[in-house]
Every structure is written in C-alpha cells, then in structure tokens.
Length: 203
Image (cartoon, rainbow, N blue to C red; front, side, top):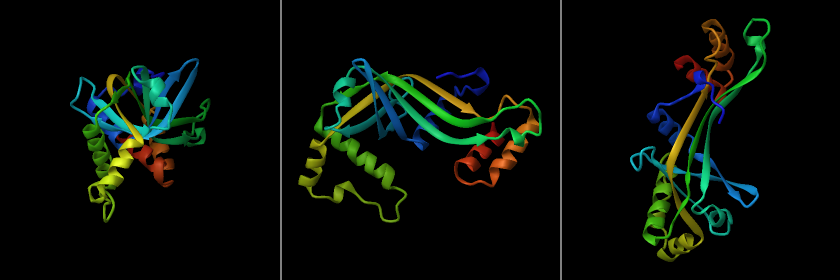
C-alpha cells in the first residue's frame, strides 16, 4: 500500500483496534496467473506472534483455500471513508480527495486441519458477532449433528501476520484551519463521514 509518511499509522495497538473494529476483510491470494478474493470476517489473536494472528473460515466449496494454502496472502481491512470537497477549504489550487482508514495484513495462509480447533473458531466467531444482539444466538444451543454438519462445510485457517501496514488519511497534509472546515462539513453527514470527522479531530 502506498503510504506517504504523514499518513502512516505504525502504532500496533491502533492497528489491532482497527482490525477488530472493521473485521469484515477482503482476503486476496494468487491462483496461477490470476488473483482471487473472498469477503470474510476475520478474528485477531493479538498475542500470537510478533504482529498477531488472524483466524477465519471459508466455505469448503470455495476453491480459494486450496490455491492459497501455504501461499502469501493479503487481508485488507477497510475502515470509515469520506469524500472531501475542495470547496470546503476556502482556498485556491486545491483538489477533491478521499479520507479513509485502512489496514493491510500480510502472511502465509495455514489451514487448520483439526476438528476441535475448527469448532472453537466457529463458537468464537458466533459469540463475537452475536454479542450486540438483545438475545444472542448460541451455537452451543444447536443440535450436535447440526454443528457437526456446519463444521464439515467449512475450512478453517490462520494467518500469522508477517507484515502490518496502516494508513490513516485524515487531512494531515493540510493546515489546521482547513482541517477544521473539513470537520465542520463532515460532522452533520452521519455514518462514515461523522466518524472521519472525529478521527480528523483526534489526528
């Protein structure tokens, strides 16, 4: 990822925080002369390895796991983003741009060929994403044969992170008064725009 120095995020805790918050990732790998990608939720084990380890699963019917096993892969985590209009700067010779947060994690994909570990990953994934529900759905409450069937239909994997890159593009290359105008323009738009405004204010 192209990262000018003023946009670089190197704080590992902040990179890990972003991975966990924006955990629905794009997993990219090579397959012969082609590239393949899957959109997957990935969980982070912060303390496994120097940069942490990602774990996840994909459908067994998805051919990506076969071509990616043991190969270098890239997991892309996309955070909030917002269009920035040059009209907000009240300046001349400025152009439109985009502010955003992104994390790239690189490593080699390792298949998890262990039923207990696969089931543990399924339980952990469900617990992670059901936690915000008023009445969380629990995998443990389902019939054993149903759970066993689910496990047979997926392939679990882990990705020990070998390199971690972060880009927080938040108007750091503009003077303070311009950043304030961008914050004001974004603040009332809701969603990603408001989150970008908060991040600019903290940058």
